[in-house]
Amino acid sequence: MDVILSKLFASVGDELHVLDCMAYLMILMAACTFITLLFENVPYGRYATSRYGFPVNVKFAWFVQELPAFLVPLCLVLGTSASKTTHLPNRLLLAIYFCHYTQRSLIYPFLIRGGKSTPFASFALAFVFCVYNGYMQVRYLSHYADYPADWVTSPYFITGSLLWLVGWLVNIHSDHILRNLRKSGETGYRIPQGEMPAIVTCRFWPIKTSARDMTCKVVFLSMCLELTSLGR
Image 1 (cartoon, helix red, strand yellow):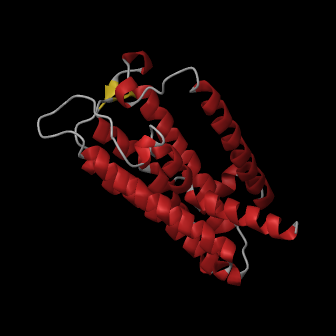
Image 2 (cartoon, one colour; image 1 turned 90 degrees about the vertical axis):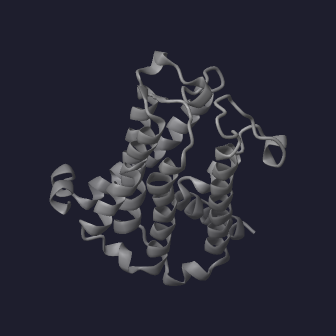
């Protein structure tokens, strides 16, 4: 893996620059996606349509599209020098990342009950995103991120980690609720009632905000709290 990366990047500085650009590009893509979805329904689930390509079995699609988010990071950690993995803060953030994507790629797809097929375009874009996201986050954490050893005992890290944990657990609980909305033999579309749906239609929106891309969110929250304390 180191040999392949050395052919792609002339120096450490080049790769770090690419990682920075990838992070900024992800922010731009998020903004573009937000604006687009104000006018267009995402082609997934109840809004799946043949306009976005032939249908792919939902279990197969989930497993294959999410798998790069697990395998690419695994190759980066085990197949490269990954010098920063000897540091405790980096190990904990990597553990958080792998905890999330082990569940999403190796467990969740096989728990899906029924569900509409996924249009190929949505499946392909999700696959590309998982490759992109897995490389960006784990390459940085395993090779470049530098945190003080005592950072894991700071209120910033603890607060961010608790935020992720709550989001991750609620995400799994919500999956369980959604899987059990239909009674045996039912095929119609069902909407969850009570709890969070009384506040927001898609319970996954606030949950995913805290649970998905969690390593970035832990770091981001820590930075915000640090800047706030410096400004006082």
